[in-house]
Image (cartoon, rainbow, N blue to C red; front, side, top):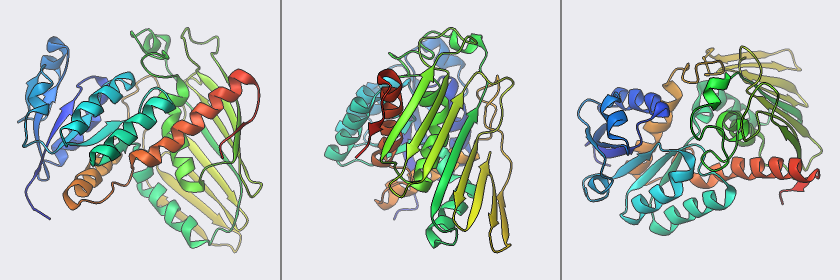
Length: 342
């Protein structure tokens, strides 16, 4: 494996690019950011990008640059498939911002395109690489906690109406949905990575009186598991002023609680465990009010994967799971029926 810096480019320089750019600055000894692409020349000029990167409004500059080995796709969800297809076809590896795409069909097409082209695909679902989440994952694998009995994932966040007044925000055409696809996807993805996929899903999604928007801002769902365990999911952006996201896992030999980067475990034999540090999550009026350490971890892992020829920690194929569950929850809400996943 070469010790040279990985040369990469970034597609997209909007609001969500800030933690990526800060992470790339931190990883300057490992990565060389060649280009930053944006469609809007004025917004691109105002964006704070990595120091040595060249700004461009011509996507071909990135596609034609053979020295660029990987690309970060940070554009709105409905553009991901087109962008990734162009990048993958010229043999460049891809790290894409969540969600993969606006629906399961397009998300699956994106993953399959990268597999066909033989390029690595990573997804920015950074909650999986928080210290506390990694610690809990390892603990579950030991079997020390026993069998899963029940679980609860809660995302009680707040967004003012001005957030949804931005063009395209919370629409099906651009974002693919509301609170599930844009906010709670991180916590739901982490829940699934910890306890696996359910057998069936039932759910109810609504738009509360708090917001005027096309898609849902409040969801309750139940995930049913093969061993009889159930997991409840609650997600909203109508809980003022916004609260830390939380995952509670009840096992036959103890209980584990994750809250904003901190893990607390209570074993039935009297032992206890605490791991991680409290982290801001962007759950209030400022959607970017969080630390970028987890973003940096995903980026660093992706760089390692590209250079070593191995799979990244958060693969495109694994990210399809959360989109499959979100699609099932929304289908259940529309049709008032339980949706099987197997």
